[in-house]
Length: 130
Image 1 (cartoon, rainbow, N blue to C red):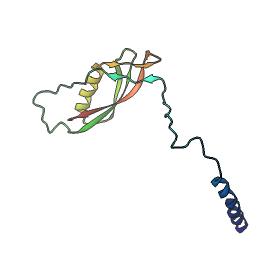
Image 2: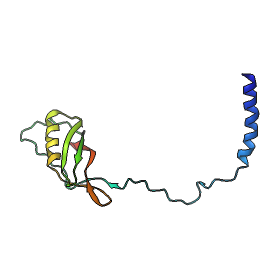
Image 3: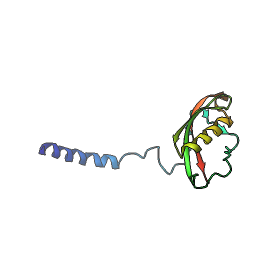
Image 4: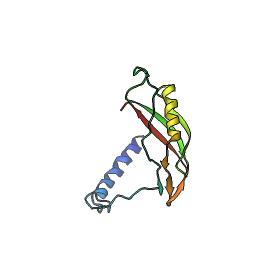
């Protein structure tokens, strides 16, 4: 074990001057470079109008959570229609149902690949009470 430790220390002393004398890399932080753009070539779907949810009159404010979020997973087809809407993170079952119905009735600008509309799976977060 001691011989291995000694050889490691001896070898490291040879490598330190080599690193100090190495030429500067071409990845110098002071050199002006543009960050490469990372893209899969897919543009995401965009909701065309805000989702409006109509609540029954007389619904108590105590029933509605404030400043909560409902997370959904869904598929937006090549025509911009939402389908297979599922609640991932719930607020309360009644409100979740209203939100799912509203998303299913909503319209999206479809996702595109090479300027051709395509269906995509996506996640959507709906903010409540904000």
